[in-house]
Length: 425
Ligand code: AQP
Image (cartoon, rainbow, N blue to C red; front, side, top):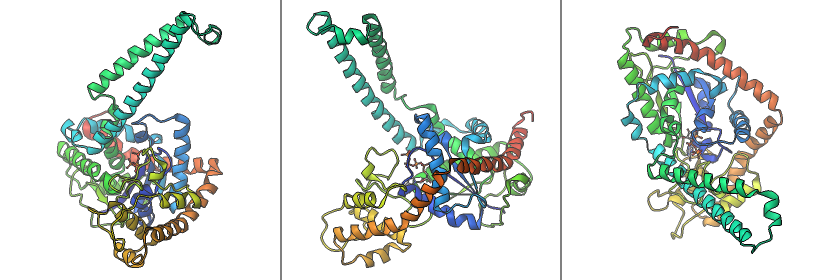
């Protein structure tokens, strides 16, 4: 049985410590044990609106972060999801094999749909207020209470009236959408199917992720199973996957007897949830995941944060008032537990060892110690990212090469999928 590691991060802003400790840091070691592919999942990013210029920038930053953290683009395949069309094509085919009930169970959709709902409610509130003020101002002008000059210079009465009415209708539609819980886009709902396609397009066997992605990985296995049952094959899957390792990909799959794929077209991908920090929490709230989309910059450490910023963020991190030594206790002391976990992960020690090291520290001393450890760990990564980002053309070249190698692996597999389901090829 041959193994292939596949994983990815969304280019949705600055990568943070959670992305690093929960995912990328683990990839670095894995690339030496398995054939590996690391994707920048821009198609997932657009499940919520992204500014096109910012998205382009974030794609390069994510590529730079992978390489700066230790991913070797010669050894592993580093590429952008949207540049390999097999992801979208296979996603559609898998959509047609995924019962809605399976997607309805996904908790991340519910959380993100709620965030999107709250964001939209805020925009509506703001726009309504603006509309009200414009109308009030217009009325004052009409009644001669405000000088006509400035307003009429910029706005014609009729155009303004049309604009206000159009906005009112749009806002009413949006409110109706919110009432019907339909603000979130279809793409956000079917995100886990695209994720299954990302993995299965390469017949990947191992997927290193943070704990938050476990449910999506289980769904990917269910979808692979559903496809396998719908189209039973007589030959074992990975011998055929070997023949799919495109010649141009430069990727050879080492043997690994531990993967769980037994029979069927697709192997069932295994989640790899590794290390001490499988779920890094917000620095402002130890019960909330550290996330790029958190409104507060102080909730997370970015890989590009300089030493001063890291020190400030750690000093301001929420702690607790429990007496005695700082101890790991997730239920009672979520913030302290999070800081200990981060400290252990960047020092490369266990939580128990970390507790021993900080046994005599109060929070102020521990935070200084933690900030120093973080700065020492992240400074070389930041410096390398700065270097890499200074040469955008070289990053683009690496990504283009990666995309060609990835397509070499995916295209023959997609062709066989199409043949299997009866499409002309
Ligand atoms: N807080 C975290 N702790 C551990 N692992 C984490 N990951 C993300 N946050 C944490 C892991 O990073 C990989 C890539 O994540 P992603 O960017 O594709 O999506 P995400 O999980 O939705 O990350 P964010 O930061 O929460 O993004 P936004 O705010 O845009 O939704 C995954 O392996 C994930 O497990």
